[in-house]
Image 1 (cartoon, rainbow, N blue to C red):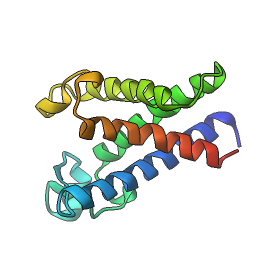
Image 2: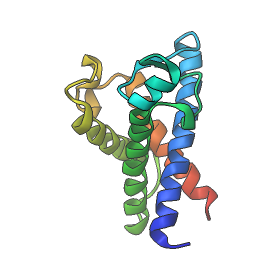
Image 3: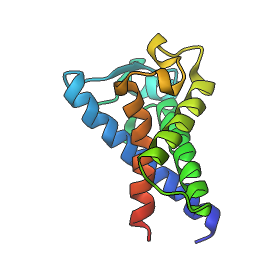
Image 4: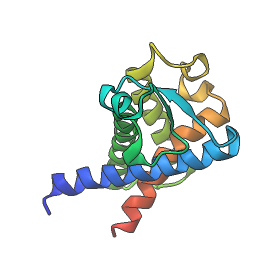
Length: 149
């Protein structure tokens, strides 16, 4: 398997794991639901609604824009991880915070207009609950990368 193909496959695996970790959070904090609107016309046509319960759907079942968001966050986390490994940085709490900040900045660049107010801040000014969502991407990238050794 070619390097770029392995890289893409790893991102997809991270995105799947991230979504599963988010589903765990939703089940604990949102009475088992996480309703989000979608603009995915194919998904809407198939399901007859523009609302998706992300807590009840597997990664492959969520609307396209939510898959893309999980994928892009996973890519940002993996890129930070690969850079840290390349430069022999320790993969400790400081790395997790640094990489989570990058994940959040990447997300904010894509979502600033539609983001909830509590998510529009720089990483250091976010609540711990919101920071944890960014950390999930980084820890998932570390977990998947470690499993490939």
